[in-house]
Length: 115
Image 1: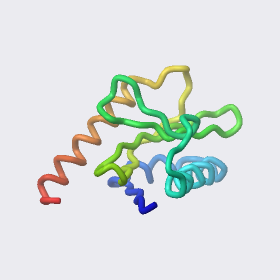
Image 2: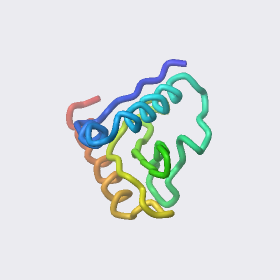
Image 3: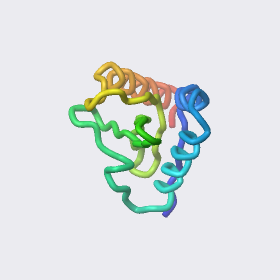
Image 4: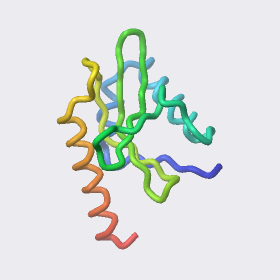
C-alpha cells in the first residue's frame, strides 16, 4: 500500500501542539494505522454526513474526545486539516464549515499552482 499523509499549511500543527503528549501519541498511532491498513474501522475514521467528502479522524483519551478533519485527494492522499476537542454528541456545524472552507482553499491553491 502506497499512501501519503499531507498536512495542509499549519492547521493541524497548530491544533496538535496544544494537546497533551498522550493525545499527540494517539493521533500519531491512528494516522500510522491509516498508512498500514487498507480500511480503518469507523472508530478511527468516519465520513461526516452532509459534508462534501469530509472525514474525521477520531481519538479518545480518557473521557476526552478529539477530532481532526481530513479528505481524500486522488483516492490515496489524505489531507489533514483543522482539529478540535469534541464536547457534545454532534460534530459542531461551525467546525464542519471551517473544514469545508479549508478544503476549498486547498483545491483553489492546488489549481493555481497547476498540480
